Length: 175
Image 1 (cartoon, one colour):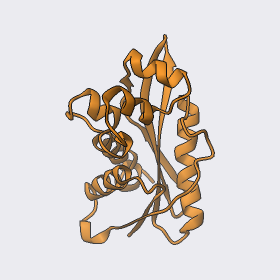
Image 2 (cartoon, one colour):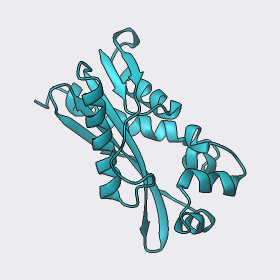
Image 3 (cartoon, helix red, strand yellow):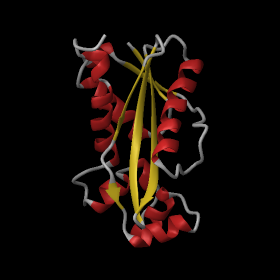
Image 4 (cartoon, helix red, strand yellow):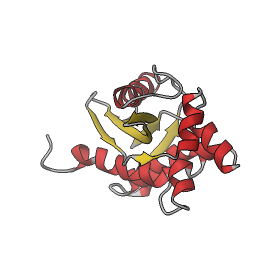
């Protein structure tokens, strides 16, 4: 089974490997990654834009690798709700026949220090790096890992949502 991840980010690749590994034997799965555009801003600003980015990535990956059994788009986004900045992500899995299944991660409230930097135009990953004095956190545990002291990580949260997005492809009650 060929699974294409619409990103070169190692966190996203590992999350896809974990989710597909929950349903399929590791020897059955070949995972490749491709760089594709999301068709949305570098920092999606709301739920709809983030979801669209994930769908666009999955579809773009299918155009690059039409022989793939599944193409996976993962898109992290933010949204301000009642003056609180929230982080989350959408996962979109596109089967070779064009059918798409999606799931959204849990939502993480972000501290005001990060909110203020993002409001000033900084991407979330860069804001995390500045506030936590780290580098390249979006290819590590992300805001989830930084704020939960590693109890939850970007990789783990993404793998969980991907596992749910796979349900319509693997459970007998779905056509």
